[in-house]
Length: 439
Image (tube, rainbow, N blue to C red; front, side, top):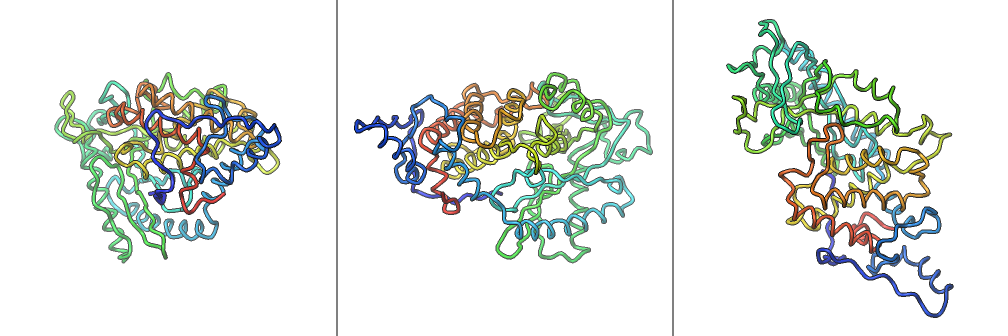
């Protein structure tokens, strides 16, 4: 629900087209340096490139005008502390009501656990605290997890031994699998009843979206519309699926011990499917399958992201990993708002996955110094464009799962890469076309 105001100030670039480099001024180096000092302030109006095509920004941020552009953009993306506090208080009160209601039930939902996920809790939310994600998951054991597809992202769940006392038994179908669709329907009824019982008439429950694992609530707090996704899930206490064996390569970045500790944690399954839900495989219908989620691990990684324990602490070295992700998310959303017909199927999780892959390659905190923001952001954009051109962005945990799969056509991937290249070569005029962002 992150909103970016559209503007016609920046003209639409032609695909696969970027501006020509600025010619050297014949009057000497002094005038050239003066132009570069003025570039940050005039970039939005001029829309002209300040670097030669194919040359990355320098690693001396203070001497690079792009550094000023990016830091100014980040200042505009900050969430005001008071607004953050007020929104959090409203969301927590709603979640508490739903959580207590579920815990008072006499079915399997009485054992739900609360897990705060998403960009807000990962400290990478931008502009407005208008989107929250909270997972309420049932811990399960004695279940059999079988892959539904060849990529390893979707699974069916069966109860081992068909024990009548198993908490999921009431949702087991004739084919022996637990129906994700029926569990989500029951969960949704519980959420609606909880709000009615508490008299929360100002909380609107949005219509169910096909394939969505959440009950989406809309709350209006003063002039801010807040979206709250109450995601239902299963916390599976067993070994991670074999599809994860070749993923999650954090050994050189965060260490083998950290990886081992993460893999001792449960993984999560959410009732999500692709397509119309009617596809069947080995007698299992797609709408009754679950998608695997490692959102809890992603949150911990982004909160404790440094190769050294003191990274971004008060007395430690400041890095720009999260800043680069915020900028990429903002750029992606701004481009989607500007070109909605060309770029309809992209989402912020693809940006986060790109950063995780980049951190796996550039593992040291010195590779992400805050003063090298322009250089680091340039490299991250190059990574993202490469994935787009190839049409393949591997899931960080399941490399066989392509996050640029059937929903993202190669044409739209190429267009997004072209638009990013234009912005990259022209001092990001789209950042200044937003009335909320000023240098």
